Length: 516
Image (cartoon, rainbow, N blue to C red; front, side, top):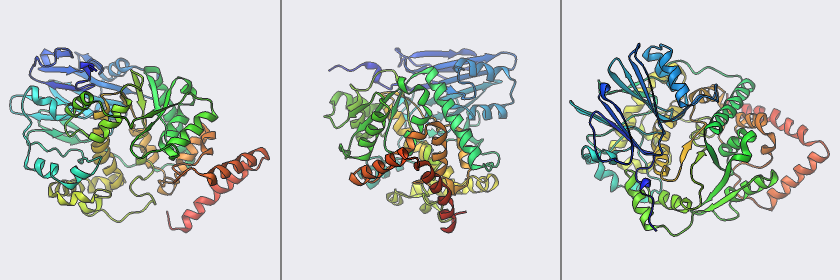
């Protein structure tokens, strides 16, 4: 089987002060006066707008979404930004408060800057020399201009137990294995002239939020994010047994008939796994179209070869999953993914508490094998020292900031980059105002396994979806009997009273357990 040549570096880009002939089938966008040449894959959106009076040019690679104005397109957002006469500081904050998956290149009075979405899910790697600059989606694509030079850490990493034995091996965002390539970290913009990353967020205190008001605000925001995306794209939603995807389903209620709802079956998942069986129960209840995609198929060697050569450090495990999707997933659909959500429900301190973060060893979590690689520990220690002050000033939790910048900007951004070979992706939770709202809610209402805030948001959007359990260890006769009893209690009118009693008593239980 001959594969489409456009799968090579799908949805990727490179921008440079130099020209190249290596991407003849890509879109070329040139700015001669700016000494800027941009090459983008045919399936990747690029939009730009210029204000000659303020000497400002904005280039958007990917897509940006403003849920406050769901009908706005990329062009509308850019035109408003260039016409409003913002200072550079205010411009960065306006861009920072957009949803989507994007890279902005800003040219202001001849100076150039790069800024991306909240968790850098449209990745930016760069190399700046005395004479030229290069900005790209990942290191391999630089080969058209220069050879990325592996550092001594490259060998240490590729010979480590972490790399060899961990299916989803990853590096903290900002840490590369090349002497002449850097990565832009979330919450920073790149000043090309200074060859320096500059932090722009957080810049103010995280405001405390009332639980009820926050749930209303968050539900409206999520719904508007889906509304905006539905106006732009044909959507798909991977549904599991967890909170994150089901909350997206709830926010998609008005558009759900147009959405391709599916579940991926891969690795150890079997027919009775909660992530397989619960989505089936849910969609059957509401008579929604549903598709289970079995990814446990023999891998296509040609596909695997392209996949592994598309992205630096590409994962064989993720290649096998996308291989299973290759001929089964509908073309031109944009995925609504539930990642980043755990930033709002304490993914790495599930009970709401943790010991003080003093060194890199306090950030190893499930990746203790990083301890055999001193360069990772040094990087984490330097990061901790750089953010302690700003966390104290703004009330931003250091674990939340770690999750947002180093984990989502590392592990998740890498996975999305690899999966671009199959589809474009939109993560509604990757929206700073939404997360600021959630993070302002007391921790006791955002516990990982019992996030009261999430339940209240779902109550606003589609309360019937609260009927099924979230991430049960298994779906067995006991669960089926429990939900049979719940059905009967609804019929005789006592279900709501019981649920109300539970919601009232649970915060008291948390207080007795010592949560503030």
